[in-house]
Length: 299
Ligand SMILES: Nc1nc2c(ncn2[C@@H]2O[C@H](COP(=O)(O)OP(=O)(O)OP(=O)(O)O)[C@@H](O)[C@H]2O)c(=O)[nH]1
Image (cartoon, rainbow, N blue to C red; front, top):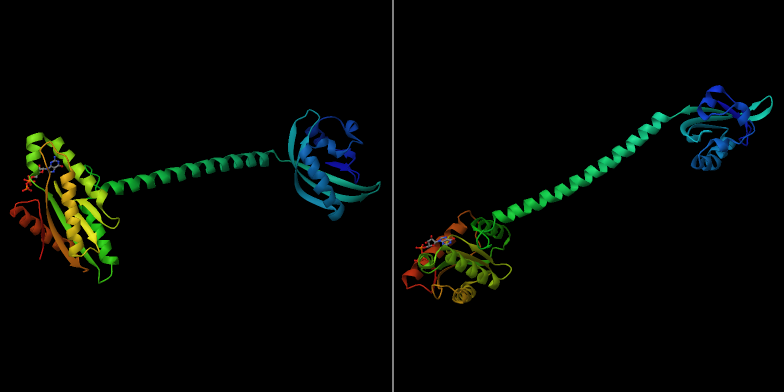
């Protein structure tokens, strides 16, 4: 406990308070209370605590830092009340040591910093997981050798088209099969066969429109899914496909392909793609029978 005059000059200090701040009562008498405070608490006391006391006559649970004669800092909670005593107006101060509160605040700040760090690490690892998921789903829709889309991607694309395209929309599907591909493997080895497939795939992909889907359907079979292409447009694209094959260099000589072309108008139903594939496959079969290196249009 401490008693000061209204300006904060010390007139009484009890023994318990001296234990906190050190020195003797005689030493402190007449000193300003400001001398007991750290610089930050002093500013707070002058700008907030004393104006409150003068105005409201009391202040409760104000948090301050005392600085004792040894220079050590002691966190305290302060209650103060302005009182008229026999010797005039005074302020009676009661101090409670608040080390626990200080420690809790310290722990709270540390825990908050740790939680923020954890949240940042979590966000980063979530981004990583999302990226890996995107890469995985991309991989699951791609052919590993050529990087083209695979059969699963074709199915998904067609389903999406069936859901979103208008009833009047038309579509064409080209089934493209490399001629005598087995001979390339047999004569020059599997790696040469792979090289031909990769080069041909690159040519196909380079010539495709954004809305087209180029997929590797099987070993040496490719599918071009061509939304909004009628029979005439699809036949022109088939010609380009033959040109792509001719541009592929192979140790086995010129590369040619047989193409089956099937056109359809929009239909719903799960077997839509299967029926288109069957028709284009039969057309490829006929192209092979006609001597290969040509396009046959399905009826
Ligand atoms: N190098 C390589 N060969 C493959 C791959 N996938 C399938 N094949 C081979 O492709 C060949 C396909 O041969 P066939 O079905 O007899 O057809 P083809 O020799 O092209 O004859 P036609 O289609 O009748 O003109 C087989 O020898 C398969 O082993 C692959 O990823 N890489």
